[in-house]
Image 1 (spheres, rainbow, N blue to C red):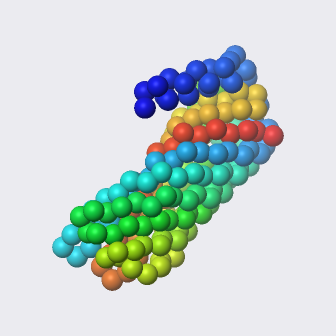
Image 2: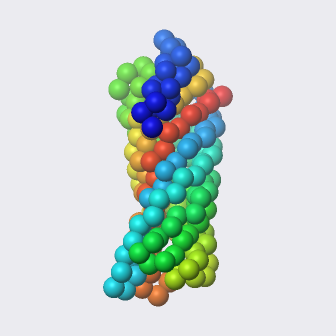
Length: 180
C-alpha cells in the first residue's frame, strides 16, 4: 500500500509541477473509493468494507463555490457477524465550499444529498432506495487543467432501510480531475 501512495505522490508531482490553477468553470473527475458500510439491526451490528469507483461532474460558480454531481458503485461488502452482504449505488448532489491555502492547493467541504440503492442479501434481504444528507471534506492540488486530491465523505448517515435496520456509508477517495 505504501508503494502505491509513493507512486501516486510522484505522479501528482509530475502532473502538477509548478503549474498555476485556472478555475475554468467545469470539471470532470474519477475516483477510487474505499467504502465503509455499517449496519445496525435490533440486537446486532456489523461493518463491511468494499472498494468502488466514482465519476464526478462539477461546475465552478466562483473561486470558492462549485456544484457537483457524483455517481458511485461499490463492490459487495460482506457482514460476517450478521451473515449478510450488500452492494450499493450512490448518486450525490453536492455543494463544494473551497478555502484556498495557496495558488495550487486548497481544502474543501462538501454538503448535499445522496440517493442510494442498496441490494442486500443473506440475513438482509430486499431492495432499498433511500436518500440522506451527505457531508465531507478533502484536500486538492490543482494544476492548469489537472488536479488530484484525497477526501472523506459520509454518503448515508444512519439511514433506515427496513424495520429496525440502519445503514451508514462512509468513503475515503483518491481523486483525479480535469478542468475545462
